[in-house]
Length: 288
Image 1: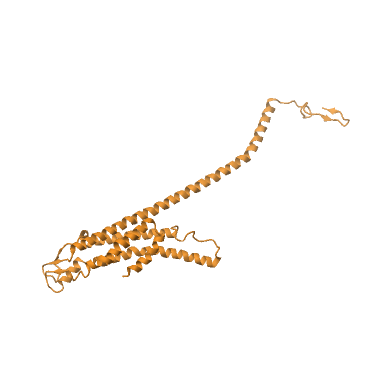
Image 2: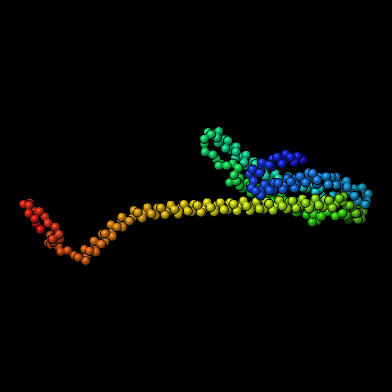
């Protein structure tokens, strides 16, 4: 397997990852891939060849080895690393899809057309959901493979001696010995510990993304609420300014009516108020 090619592809994820994602990627390649390629493969080597039993019955050694090692540690870790790292490529593919849409938009509407995305690598909208999906997928893969490793080899332990009981063609009980069990146990614990650290980092990144999204939504909601209340207040002030002159006129009319009631004026037979006005006669004199 060409791990350098995989590392080259995933190095682009750093541009779109959070701080937790960058730490996770460093742990994967330094403490897992590098240890796996440099040391673990040499420690296990051809483990079936070094699996020694005290009985030479044809096929007995192969049956015992298959019973205790249904899948090799090395191959299981290789599958785990592939399944854990490949989902990160979805983020790169999503960003490439956004950049392709931007390019087509510029070709269609010109270079000065409005952009579809303010930043193609910013985790908003669909890219945020893609990134969150990759985190949950990686978390599930890590937990599943740890459970498989624990289930097949009891508590990740590698005993020096294993006994094959009632496994044909082995007669009765056959004792088999594992080569370098202590060294293999140390590497197993190291890989399990590195996987546990990656699980913790993935959980922290999930909570960080969700918390940041909630805070951003709360700030946006407060901003919209403040702008709405400000617009309502300005509208109410405009109404008050329009209503104040009308209210003044109404109060003046009410005051005049009260004065008329309190001080009634006499009327003559023609319906005019007595002494309230004078008319000029045609001759130039005054008439009452």
